[in-house]
Length: 183
Length: 135
Image 1 (cartoon, rainbow over the protein chains, first blue to last red):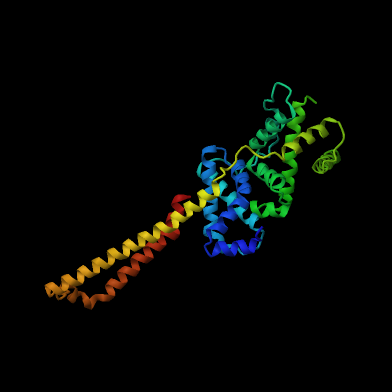
Image 2 (spheres, chains in turn blue, purple; image 1 turned 90 degrees about the vertical axis):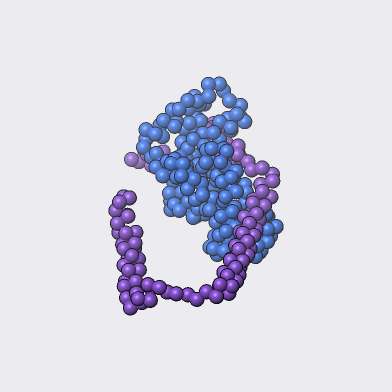
């Protein structure tokens, strides 16, 4: 596996094979970001393509202040948020009010008892219903193995806020699952 | 207040244990957290097609080659235009006549003032007037 510096320097010199390798190494991360933030499935693949086009255009600006994957995730996150803004979908207002969080927990649960894999799928769908900030930190932390500082860099949130959102998001999901389990 | 704090602390402890797969207790919170942490490792439904990287690189290549071709056509067009103009001037033995501009040459400063005035007007409009209209 080629290290980030060698890869970036080859991409900067216009090596398309190296850029193909960069895409393959980071496409899962970009798909996670776009897939979790953007709800319209027909837009997602094109948005992922746009992210890598931007990465190629701006690779000259990347100065290794962070890992390459963190920088690419930042480009993907901003692109997804800008897409939401263009679609005039609310992302900035995190429903901190007790009522809206209660509504999430009280919303309809599956009527039957779920098998383990069905339960996993149901929780994955619940994650999609969470506010953008919550599902972004959950995804970056649990699926992409990023730490609080890296998530803070990507989302421009202080580390303390990242930690708090991660805690609250897991707690919300737990309350919802607990309710389904009837306890 | 101390109850709330201890509740959060207890939750943090449960989350830490669940993250390290060390949560063995069978109470409702622990069971629910085990489900949640297992599901958090699941990949979302959306996946990119296997040919994704090929598609992006070919889109990029076509985007970079197209403008080059367009610039070549533009340069050729300009060259033909200039060549045609020079040929026409030579054929017609054309001599430029500045006409009324000769008389206006004495008022050159007026043209400079006009250009600067319009520029300043545009700048003031963009900087101070338009922002107050849009907000």
